[in-house]
Length: 171
Image 1 (tube, helix red, strand yellow):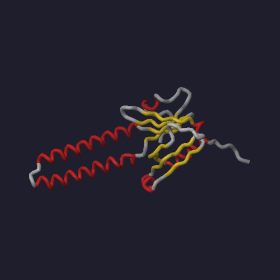
Image 2 (cartoon, rainbow, N blue to C red):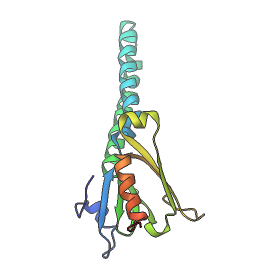
Image 3 (cartoon, rainbow, N blue to C red):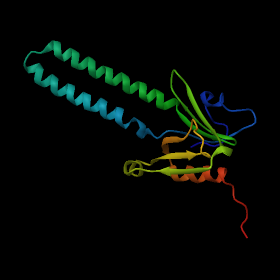
Image 4 (cartoon, helix red, strand yellow):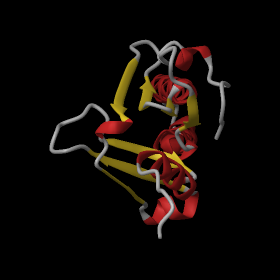
């Protein structure tokens, strides 16, 4: 979690001159769990098939198996690269979610439009430390309504709520 003007240029280009960054986080690495499981499962399967078909002289099939695993590995590297450039940013004026490596997508919601916000945590999210923000705005359909795989969800939730609903001194 960063505060201040430490956003990478890939995020800074979307900030307006009169706003400043308050919060910037990458999505939790748990977003990569499925890709990791696919690569490891594929490696185990390729190893088992190599052992089984290698003993039976199925060299042509083994080439196909290992090329398929290589494609899984390339897909995993792509997912990691995408994760490395995805950011959730809260500025003094709005919330942004920047995603995409080649095709850049920027979802945004002005802070003034948010009427309700909550976060949800699954069992796996509680164990690994991530959650999902659900944003609502006065019956309007917004580009940014869900932000999943948010790290430090309780801390970020409190910080964002304080910005959305600043409190005064109660009597």
